[in-house]
Length: 363
Ligand code: DAH
Image 1 (cartoon, rainbow, N blue to C red):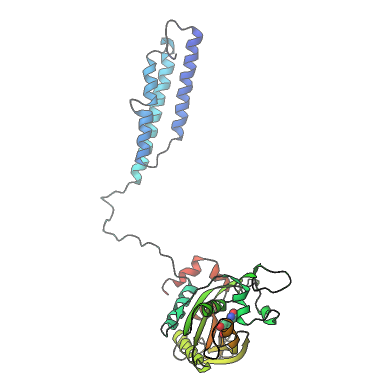
Image 2: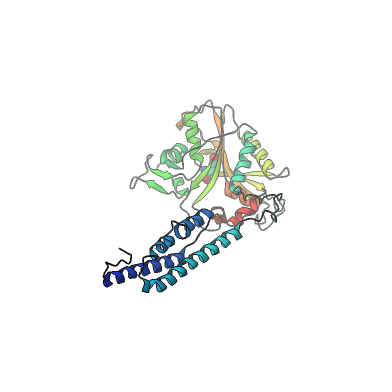
């Protein structure tokens, strides 16, 4: 229908010409926009526009039959189309060639750029160091859930239903009985002491475990407090375990972590699940105990809570308190990390700022 033919009317010939011109314009517009990012795409362009079976060639083959008085105009347009397509093709080809490596100039013996590795998180580094210290004296690692129930976090640890000690920790509740305390309340654990109860309920003494993990408390976030942080709980239950054993193990730990010169002191304290209970300070390793702004001029910094497992807790967890005794301790990993690396703002630990994290690359 495109071509001149003596039987076509004038109107038909005009219509055909109009379509041919439109096609030329359309292909010109396409060519303006084409791009190639690799040699396969470039070859596809060549095949579509410039090969013998391409669209431009197809238009040329129809040129023979264009009416003689229109040949000049259509011929010029077709030539322009072909030149534009060739120019665009050459342009794209040059661009791709420029991207290719010049193997004569490239130094193929050069060592490649190193692959950038991530860094160990400072909290993980410190946690691993602590686990390593305790594993040398026979402690193994135990794990427990972060979404817990009241029973394992409070009840089995001697927190009586109306005991004010429950207020010591602001708890995030997930499911809670209205107005009264229930062992079935579901909450985010507020301390890793909950893993103690799970271990005692399922294992027989001797028990010697370390329970690292994340804990949650309903606290406003600031440089000194966060709504989640990390603890490591320690538990030892056996026959004849004494407070002296606890003290000796904690002294060993403090010296291994902070250096041989480190001293410890135990101050009486209160926890519902230990009796007697204590808090442990170490000599400030920044000033060596002389007093500085970090230790508020006392020479001591607090690092953990500890005590002898309350016989009531042993019994609640199915361990005969007449036969067995035990000690427990709980430490904050952020606190120890702050002491080790002098990190002053707790929020840095969870912001994932690579400028902060990259500082631990060689630790
Ligand atoms: N669970 C306590 C807390 O989160 C820490 C703690 C204190 C754990 C004394 C213990 C312990 O095992 O004996 O504050």
